[in-house]
Image (tube, rainbow, N blue to C red; front, side, top):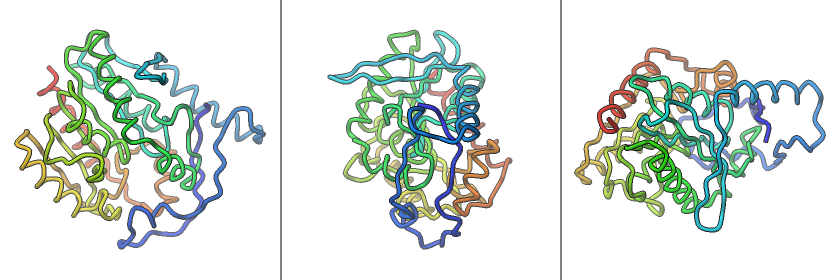
Length: 291
């Protein structure tokens, strides 16, 4: 599927009392982008350009688990420590690919793999992303993560970590509980539901990052971050939870399109120092536990 530039379905600024569900519930007018659907020529060209540039660094592979096969995208050094990189609710778009390329370039070098949890679908706006996330088989996604970890270990990575953003951040933390073979996890602004995984049962080291201004109540706000911190202490695994002053949700998204997409969702913060600090902490954590 061709990637896309975010088109916000609302320009409303979100209140600090927003819950995750109300924050996402702007519209139910879904239109998943497909190269076979009629599109304006300029819109199609711009989206094609963005995905083409992002794709050029990656090797596309297929991974099988149980009775399903899914695409995945790999970038980085052969035989380097592996990192499974999990998408935000948008799908495998330009932003998660930017993160994977960044990870592959961090010293001492990593092999990053993005599993396509949505099987090729990408949300163009908030309503579509909500629709895709609500339709996700979360337990199936955990199985995709496990298959991705196993693929990396079978293809030259002695140790493998998992990281993710928003929805993917919650899944990264869940993987530390549910996926054998995970050697470390780093989650960005997301915690798993109690029905999916209890962080108090984590079996691999977990680092987590949250924005102080994040208003996804119960999912990635400050209280959710502090509750996660307490549960990780119970688990007994090495853990760190970092909260970044002046940053809101998805603060790691620093591409020009990602910045505009956040602004359209009411998030005006831009703090490069926080982003750099989070990357340095990520690099130190993964190097410590994957080397």
